[in-house]
Image (cartoon, rainbow, N blue to C red; front, side, top):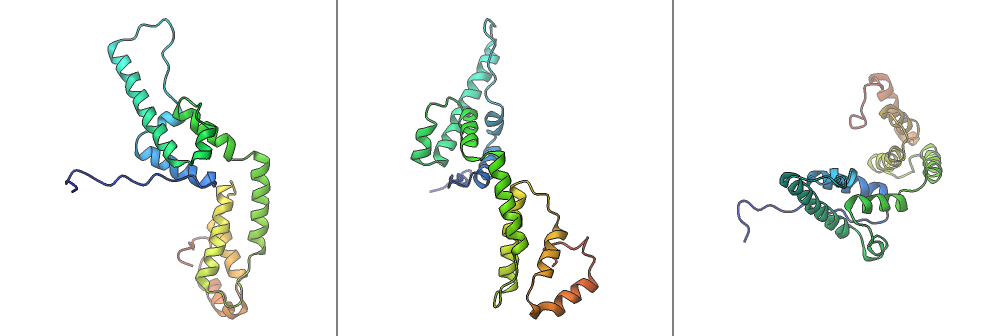
Length: 191
């Protein structure tokens, strides 16, 4: 039975092969657990030949324990096949850097993916029989993928795309929005 002081541990994001999405979730998770600095910077190493005070030794030991906890979270987030490729990594930073290098993709690959997404965005049109919400969803998914890949896209670009690519059935609605709203201040949610 749970006590008043206990709380549910947030779910550890599982790596499903989509590195950019997973890394964003995992970074947020590790930040909330206060382990991100270890992943980002690593454990500060003492210089050789330096005598450490008891307080400094304690701090380093605390950092090593936190690093083990961060490694544990990373191990729980990945499946056995991925785990076997990083077993020789000594710290959470080493594991994170290795995963990033293997799964994030090269600049050239990311540029090609962004080009494909730009084309997909340009080709988007509302389908006959498709609801407005379904079309908004498809458009926003593509736009958000583009943003993840580094595209700087203002809401007004998405709004213009949606309005110009709806079926003729909605022409009167589009005209009404064009006449009554300032597009530069209109948000996607308001649209």
